[in-house]
Amino acid sequence: MADAKVIPFDDDRSRGSGAGGGSGGSAAPRPARRRGAGSRRKGTAESESESESMGEVQPLPVRGAAGEKDDPGTHESPGPQPSAGNGVDENGVDEDGGLERRIAGGLSFLRRRLTGDYEVDDFGYDAELTDQVLMSLLRPVYEKYFRVEVKGVENIPAEGGALIVANHSGTLPLDGLMMQVAVHDHHPADRHLRLLAADLVFVLPVVNELARKLGHTLACAEDAERLLGQGELVGVMPEGFKGIGKPFGERYKLQRFGRGGFVSTALRQGAPIVPCSIVGAEEIYPMIGNSKTLARLLGFPYFPLTPTFPWLGPLGGVPLPTKWTIQFGEPIPTDGYAPEAAEDPVLMFNLTDQVREQIQHTLYRLLVQRRSVFF
Image 1 (cartoon, rainbow, N blue to C red):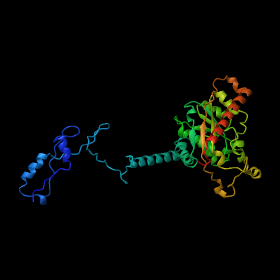
Image 2 (cartoon, one colour):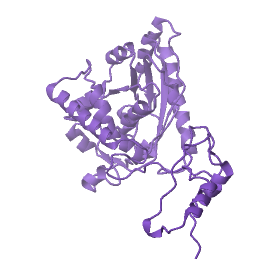
Image 3 (cartoon, rainbow, N blue to C red):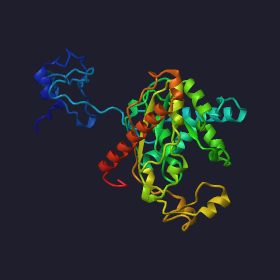
Image 4 (cartoon, rainbow, N blue to C red):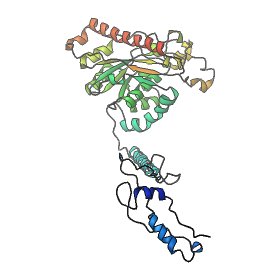
């Protein structure tokens, strides 16, 4: 039986590129692979000389820098694969390090809360608590439950005071909270919306504290002017309880916008007015009735009766998972008017009607474009 001959597995490549061939020049020679002692036979000098004449085994080519092409026939060896438990996820991110940072950040947050080492403004707004806790609690409802679609957020000024005027609906004021999340999460300048709320919000236990921490303040001209003067983004819903407590049969029909006080405030500060239209909130609690007797006993402006509340108890308080759309319209400038224009009732009426009509027309257009209440 003839002597066996050792043929390198990349012999064809070695012959094509030469003994010193490679993708970028001659590679360092490597000693020939050794065989086991059991396969070695006497008198193999001739075989060894033939193997040497074929060329030495070359190392596999290494992939060059990004943008360089590999030579034909080369094979890129896979890098180290992430595995569970080694602290690296599928994107190569160090999970252990990220987890440690999150834990350290959480402990630092708790320490500041316990020691009182945090700041709130004159209205009670707590920026740190809002960003790290309250928005994190509202975001799943915004993204997963109502699946809010935001349009025209670029119409909100990147800096300076501005007044966002929106329609109000839904029996409970969830539309204001969702509008607040929309501005916080989608505006390129990371602006925060300061909502003007009714007196009832600030007499309810727990709700009062949370509203203050979120940056809400009393719906009065003095607070609104002060916030606008500080360059804040202020949100107002002029329909008030007439809008949020209207019957389901009157959905998406705007109620009266008060006496135009928001226009007077914007004129005094020269702040632009940004109309905002919200579709989807009307159907979360279809209000088919109003128990005025219970409302008087409880001190509420209305007591809603819906297909599920109060008949199903606490389950009746779960809103329907409707699909929402929030659209911010083009701003209406007010800085071109004289200071005394804020006292002109005709001008205030005209601007109020302009804002109301723009919101109403946008609502109709969004309703026509909507495929379904829930999708």
